[in-house]
Length: 305
Image 1 (cartoon, rainbow, N blue to C red):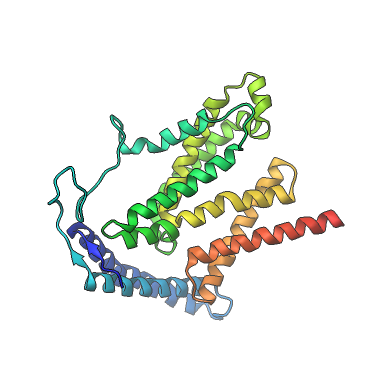
Image 2: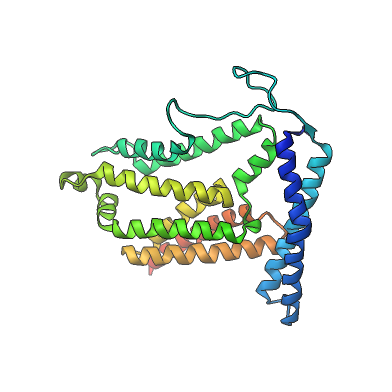
């Protein structure tokens, strides 16, 4: 087993999380189970199933935190100066003259500027490559960082089962604002999406509209990765949209298909993770793979008919 290093601040955060899980969260799930049991038949009781799943992951997380804190080596900050990165140092990656928070907007600007009239490589392929490379780079950094194992796990699979109401409200406000912006800007965004060359030829300010889309898109992705992890966010971005393209022609119908596939797949993945005692995030990702395959088969069947 590899040695785990924790800073005093990191150890304090894990202890605070452990305290919350063993007191508040345990009590909440116990109350939910009691209320669900009062409803009667447990075999088809969705509230009971979800509560049991959350209880299982809660107890697993408690055992994991206890093992980490029991075996961890606490390291103090500093000791290496400002020119040497060593265990315990806090490192901030920052472009000269820029705040760390500007990375999302810088990325949006880069994607907007790399949109060409007649691209050799599709823009979507470039975005997918950047997404994958950035995730891999983050994994490399975290593999060498104190508390890197915990951060790496959070990066990949998030913490879906422990999202609290303030976090839900925050993303609800953010997603609603982004949805409103995209709705108001739907005409130019759809024109660019459906025919970039025609949009350039018509005089549409393609790069400005691209920047707006990628900037808002970036805020949604970064807030989502914190909760759901890289793998699940990527699946949500790609699979429902592809299923919509496979099964429908109009924009409205494609949106409807995507929403239905995303919702049903999420529920099916969560239930499967409970029934077979599997990690929720990874199970939902695999469920999306199954959904995509089923949509492909359904498309062939419709065409053959």
